[in-house]
Length: 509
Image 1 (cartoon, rainbow, N blue to C red):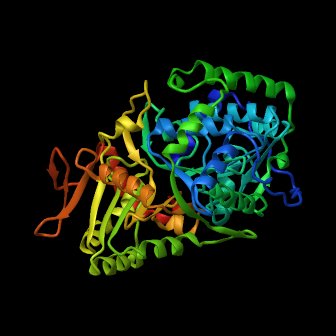
Image 2: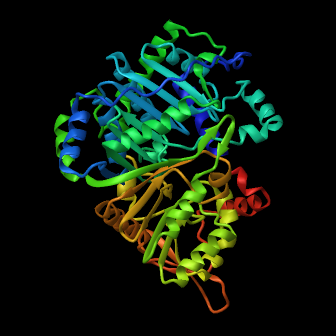
Image 3: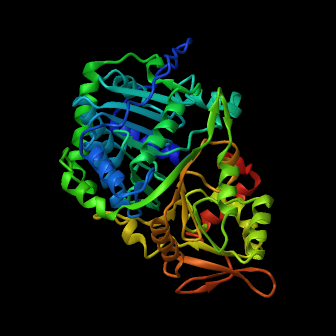
């Protein structure tokens, strides 16, 4: 969390979004009458593609594309936004003011200017210094911005005080990530909006995964979006006490466009709105047909109904022959160990890939995960940890960027090469008990086969260590280059932080 905070402060200053912090929220929160997504578009390239899928597939099937390389994940987001005819809905935990954040926001604003209705939900955790820009954006035609669990007081110092006095409320965050266009296409998965998630950071980049869906799955995600849009913890940015300023917005808008236009990191991406008809026509042959169910934690007033943990347990337990899991943050707990042990006893082949300390962006999670390593192995799990120098970096970093290291951020599972889960949920107490999470369970053997190959690729020695126990029960790490008896780390201070964080509650991270 501290790394996110420092990065966002620097990026907000670079954007020049605000000269000072806004005073806060209005004393009386205006809660408008519920509004809902428009019916799916009946014209435009996305509607045509959805119609083709409906004609070629069975009833209720959608078309799906794995977004594994960072480049494709950003490129297809741009393609959907530029192709929008009626609506764009985005929900995200983090939206950084860096190269990718500016580029996506710029294209969304262009869509609103041509009449597309835009709804944005952003978690308010790290929006320090952005109140003026958010108020200005909210005032633009065809754009509405809402904040999840917003801070009442907006300055850095007052937020710190509010966190101390209202920790229970403010510790709850919206971890969902979703983009829906025209009610016909959607992208969901693990990626927030920021350079680290799209291979554009010189510091480090995440190896992550999304899925693009065309067809009924978009309507399913619309239901989820509407549920959050009209929920009590989601508050319109019109409740910020900062007054909109059209002249200030024009200056910010010019800086935003200049930042996207002049950034060498974005050289592989189209800088202007374009016609994606040919790319969408070619996409039709690449899609996997399948049925889907969108799952998410529901909001009941201010209370979160934590449905995802139990649902994911049920999904995992349905495996008869094989279970593959790739998940960035794993702190399993005894119930999960018992479940995996029972599955192993019935001859289910279980393989799990997570971060090593060396690939971690959050050493605190590793500090609470590491005591479970031998339990996982003894439960029959073939356990792997991601390398910071993984060969798969060629799919993570986007030219001309070469990052210092790569970390794992994927949250996905495959059972029996039949069904997949892709979403936002980590396998830790915060995701299970505190945050809101979402994902899609997709029945598609061909999609499952492709994801299985991706996961097995990431577990190979050039990308990960395979963990085992020696005759004394101590953990060994083996990859294509070495076997070692101490956990890999990027440096001495990372090991120090790993020790310090063992004394802090695991739910804080």
